[in-house]
Length: 99
Figure 1 (cartoon, rainbow, N blue to C red):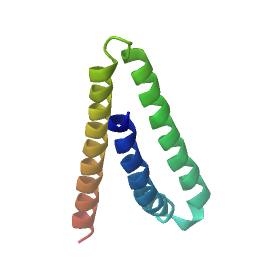
Figure 2: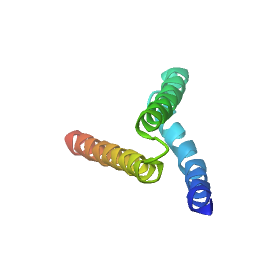
Figure 3: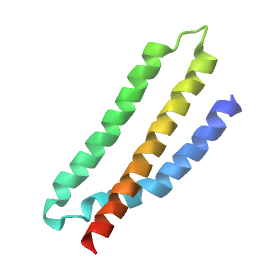
Figure 4: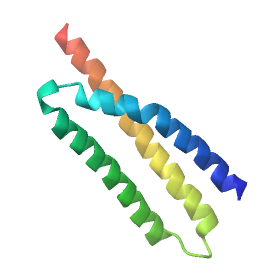
């Protein structure tokens, strides 16, 4: 039981550390569109969670829950890492173009 809920505690802690900065970054780009940016950022977050929940529900069965659950978690972490690296690349390209 602690093998599942222990890491979930760290996920919650990391969300608490990163989400405020992500939301501040999302709403600070264009101050006149702060409400729209906050709503869109929240909608994207909820949509991502709902998508991953539906994928997990479709993939997991009682027989394969242990390994498929780890596979779903690994794939979502890989997608998140890829998205972060793409965003970093686009930001650097934008900064280089401004010079």
